Length: 364
Image (cartoon, rainbow, N blue to C red):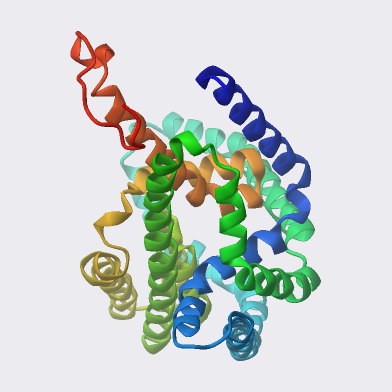
């Protein structure tokens, strides 16, 4: 088979895969979650297997402990989070009224800087005319997001299908990898292995490291905001940490919500400043210790590229696209670097005959 035919065949395969993802995206969540769990736990099973334990026993032990720990964490956190959310909804009108009262002097002072009363009227009319549009957009986005969650984030499938998928994938992980490897073109097998190792290093470094960073940040923000006396500090802190997998955006959302609650709750500047200090300390902890130690520079995924991948995945495939955004970005990043390396060795780049350098797959 010629290179052109190989490219066409693999292009058709990728096209069919994308089409299947589009049509089956509403049922993919428990399978993607099971695959992610198996991928994260595979190194632990490998160590137990090297220590003399059978693969099936190691898989059962690791999977069982993982889901028991997961259920225990849910049992501890869900009642607290649920109670705080109910209390927050009950207190929401009071918070809105408090923010409006405290913001009134600032609004009046801002009006004093306007050049004329007509300017104030125009700004007021502009806000009123566009406020409805903004609200419609927000409601539409929220409805789409929640609707996707209702279809894919099915609680029954999450607690029944996902453990089964994770167990069988984890038990047969090496067999699945071997079968996939047997389908790869033999002519370029070494090159594919090399790129696959780079993708694995990138995904392992980011997913395992970033997961740990998000959990630690959530605990830090939740405990810190609760200690300074912020109402619903645990929910805001945990939410901020869990959404921190989106660079900068997660912290910014939590910061805005936390400051808004602090302004509505406190009448002095000191507690508000303490809330700001918690978020500032969290950013210092993440930037100077957690991310460098747990994720490191070897990931080679720029925060802007991750942010773009998450937004693009969400826009194209909804919630499933967000889940697949980082793995796809990692694969694309490795392929782009591989392509650029060969481009810099080609006549298209150097402007002359292609330099004779050994190829990575062993072919002349």
